[in-house]
Image (cartoon, rainbow, N blue to C red; front, side):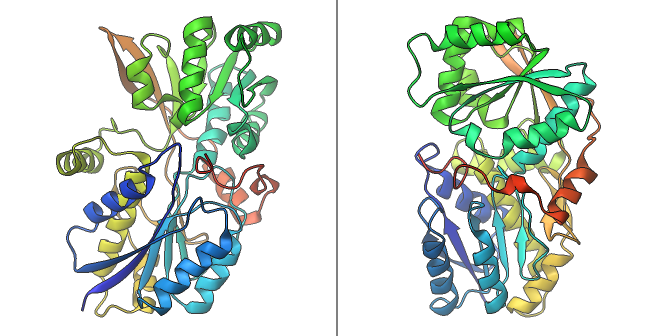
Length: 378
């Protein structure tokens, strides 16, 4: 019997291939199992009624056994309530721009990129490296998510503090690069946390090219602030910049090397974060299928609870108290050598994992961000 899977796809002006990347990754991770896909678009993910309507269509019209996809954090509790009522498993992914404060739900599983965990761990890492006075540099979009609050938890919890926060407005001022430099020199931080994405990450890179701040202060960047396209177009200025993240394409573990090789061979390009999440969800579905005797939603749910395999980010399993994946955060350095950038994973032991798990189990005020869903609304 063919397994029927519904896929919820997002749209994003910043990352126009977000939906296609996720589906490509899922198909690769599913390893040609007998699966029939039904795809429903949910726009930017900000209209929860549209998301719920899409899931109802997948369940009632297409009779899917499982729903997967990328969604945001906005009003997802309503979606989770619906999935519990329908008793159809939901295996969703998000970027983790806000700390989730929801209890374990029996029919819902989350595989997140956990950017908030990266930010919390970055704060602890900065203090460990002797940077106790930290300034944040961001665009006004990224300032609206929960990542600054997450950084604060890691920073304050480790004995550090904020020196200041420079925010580039929607329309940059004529001398934005100079104003950024003037601000940083006035607060004189021991390190800078750069929080950007998409066109604003490119904008930030152009400012660094002008003011050379990255050569003056240690810089720690969020994952999307240093994507490959930016590195390709802005030489030298990201030399010695560090990044705490759960995944880099250059990760040397065998599962990731195979993923990057297979994805590049099939689709002709390096996998994105969205492709990674799709791949892991596809592999989790494949793992679950190997444990069941018939394709029913209850059996799939039960199999997902105990799924366990080597993924590009390490051991893939769902935390029993959360039904959520928890991956180690890794510290990477970007080095400019021989006219090119090289990424090097540094020795680092995560400090905040248990604190992060407790935040997710107990609930936390950082779930209410200023924007609906990270990196989708423009």
